[in-house]
Length: 529
Image (tube, rainbow, N blue to C red; front, side):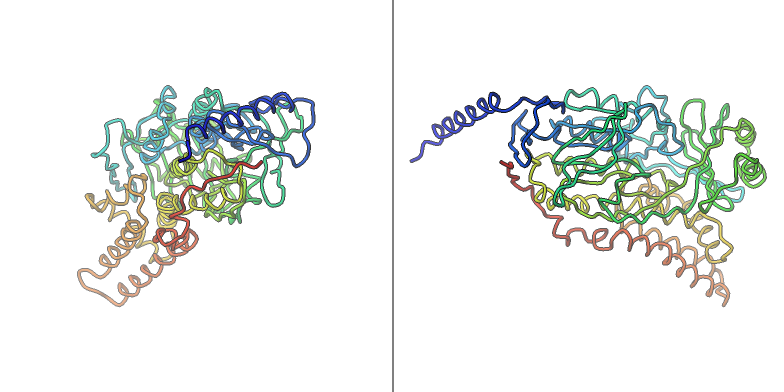
């Protein structure tokens, strides 16, 4: 019988000798990506093992992450905590100043806990959010998150986006194997269809390259790299006009407020103990000019009369203060183009209308899925095999992502005003349905909050709203006009939700277990010698 123990000692001795010789024969290389002046021979690769991780010695890291926003920073910390050598390249490391990405749903907060990043919402004056209040035609209804089954700390969080991102960056950079560098990635390095790393300009303008077996692009909604990795179909249905209200209290404390205004929704939510964010949705890609006063006139004459009276004066004061900002609202279904050596994540990969504040929840959920997929892999150097394995990522992310994406797109279209009578009835039916309370509000709110990521439940509630609207038209006695409008209402509802579902992928969304990648097991990746 073979003595496996003795064989193991012999093999370990041979490997140890080979590694020792390599240190004397080959020029040494800095572990965090610095290179000496001795050139490497083209096409020659070998592997090394550090902390149990196998990596090619001509690579600067295990993983390169492009972008250090919410997705990039959280991913860097997650992979770094798992022992990966991570190189993050971010265009601007100063604190961001954005008018979106300020509301984290309870489902996203649970993912933050799962990633060990919950302390990033501390010490930034973040506010707890327990639900929503809807306003329409002088009436209002309160919708609370169904949090009874969770610990008392679980709720939504709203905050200044920049403060949150800086906390995430600090958390990631605190790990010794995460390198956070300011630089602008100009292109992906490709060799025979495989991404080998990136080319970038450093902070001082120096042209550099960085190599890794896996490059993850998280450079946000304005990504200039996504076209290399997917088939982007970006739609811009509207723009947000952002204001900050001061010295006022919302009608419902610790709740987001949605006014079903004309022509489209108006949002209010706290971002600190003294500030309220207001986002006015303006349909289309063109907004009134700020410079010539058109925007101020639009806000005061069209929007202000629809604002709840408790915050009307603060709204006018915010307009007079003049710090009005705009941002296009983009939506883009995930259309992956699997590429060996690279992966897209965050808003660079998938966007939805920000009405429901689901973007960060989707990003953090995706990071949990990717972490679980990569955790059993010690060696990432076999790019084609890794790429095939990571195709399962696109299926496993679907329950959360498709539910939030579909709900955001559908709700935005329902909440917008329309001259069409059937759409008007659908909008009113949605408000009345949610006002019923119980399962009629808990179901949709649990979907919106990311606590119940079930696409089928979403579709059932959506058509329950449509049927409820038809019932209102036919009771107490049906009329030919009521029947006609009811039929158009159902047709309109179908025209809203089915195109979104088609873009998300019917099979992946409702029948993920039928997708072969769903069952893909971790491969035994071979070190390239």
